[in-house]
Structures are given as structure tokens and as C-alpha cells.
Image 1: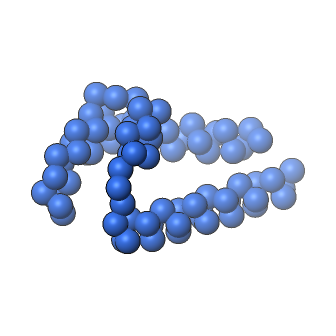
Image 2: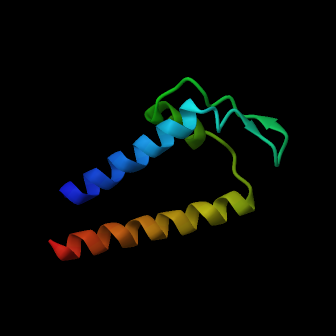
Length: 79
């Protein structure tokens, strides 16, 4: 469990550094103002969770969910 929490904290720290550097202010691909700046990671997740996603976005979501759960299972099987 500790390894999972450490992994989550590391991802949140990395995300926060991207938020702080305004990486999520503007999407050049869609030419859209995202406005995901000056917030913490919990607020970031809350806002993004409310978005409507495209088929490509959904493909990334499914792949990420599967990879995440596979990693969690791997960690738990070691314990």
C-alpha cells in the first residue's frame, strides 16, 4: 500500500509542476483555452472529470485505466 501511495504522490507532484508552469492553460491542438492554472491537483482532476471527451480522449482514458490497474495489481501481488 505504501508503494501505491508513493506512486500517487509522485504523479501528483509531477502534475502540480506542470500546472504551475501553465502547461494546461492552452491547448494548441484544439486552439482552446483550458484555464487549468493556479489550482491544485485535486481541483484539476475535478475540473477535467466534468469535460466531454472525444473518441481519442476516451481511448487514452481506457488505456490509462488499464495500465494503472495493472500496476496496482503488480504492486499488491508483491506484498
